Image (cartoon, rainbow, N blue to C red):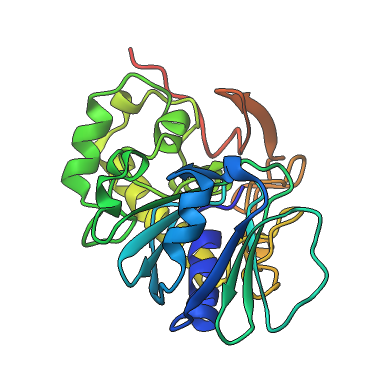
Length: 278
């Protein structure tokens, strides 16, 4: 599943490719991709709209148009491809945006889990999926005080708590594992048992891991490609995710894979020990 670094990389690529493009026609080939309005209204409403810019909130892409905002969530396998002229359609292409210069933006999704929602200009922050999100993982937005307060309220294991996007947005399975390894915290450690130094270390690890992953263009696991058809390179810097049996680069202990909240989870059993409060 594309996580924040992958979605940010897609955003940057799309902004280069389609900013300023005017939509001549839209064709929806799989109507369930469109959450609202109904697909025929979605198609008709977008005619004549120009893509002014492309933003991102958590894992949501936001196309800022002349009069509307198009919210796009890629879910498991969603991808955008830009073609300069008519090319054969991929069987997994479900939405096509035709521009007045002859180029096209195509949305492809093998599993058809991705969703698009059209809202009035300036209303994307009120979309229910976006309203639930915590701050972006930037130092000035993701503050230590608010993070610590949120952790102290929860008895949940730290990994699933970070995955639910409410304390900080953008973390998925890969980057939670990496941040917890960097901060030396066991993925099943109850959130409210973390000490002040551990919380501070975890906040910095989240900011660092996601920042480095954005710079690397994301992580290529199986099928991820960005909007330019390029693979990310952060997989070369992974310390625990996908490293089962490999020696931890800090202590040489073999990395272990287990399940936490039904998610494949990687950690170092020596560096990341579960601490049971007395």
